[in-house]
Image 1: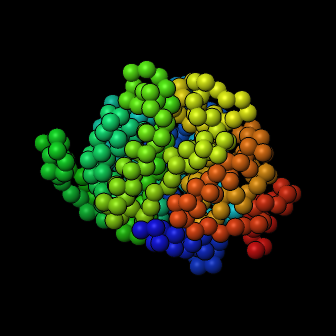
Image 2: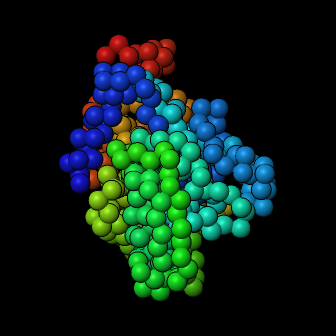
Length: 362
């Protein structure tokens, strides 16, 4: 799987730079608040990404979050800014709802009336990134790995095959419901779509607060459970092209002394990867790191190529030295996860080189 993923990343890079095709790569992010994040990343670059649930939030306000107004940018918005700097042609869309599971995306189990499945079927996607609920894949944290694993496969089938199908969850995993689920045809299915799993991160609120699933244990306990769960789901579902190792990058930032381990006991001069109001959503630093890992995974370009002049970091108020450190962490984690990366020296250029224009000359 690793070899195919890396080869595909290189192929997409060639396509996006115009060597093979002129059509942009259409990418869809499917997930929840771990993808749309929190301010200031929440509404970053919204003019250049499509929030497929913006109209849903207007028509069915029960599912909206007034304190987090749409449209959202989040990790997809940062990712889009990075691809633009690299001169890559990407059309970025997302279908995100707070707390959504992969199961919820396929069978629309949400109180808001939002048709999440219709979002997935609204276009023919080249790449789809699936991000499960933060505890969905881990039994110990209240999730259900068997259910998560099953819905990775079912969503993959819906995205790539397109034929209507029916099933009962009891036939897929122990404890599943007996209800007959009827999934309509997807007219925009793409058998060549590449599906990636967005590996999420350990939560300090479940580790450092009392009476939680991982209380009294090191952050690695939850991190390792997530890594194992996402790897197992990828191995069990051949439709998955690879896992984007965001959670592992979070731990690498901690181990390298870039980020603090316990945000409830802040460490001076270290970054807090989690949002200070709840310590489980990503902060601006965690969101930026997530997007860097996503960028490297999907494009095959080393995120360390950007350097201190990277635009999204500057827009988000991240100090250039912090941006460079997070880029290095992302690069090293991708290398450790067997991603083959290409350096792009033009991305390290002075802003006056206008980023993408400098890269287009190479």
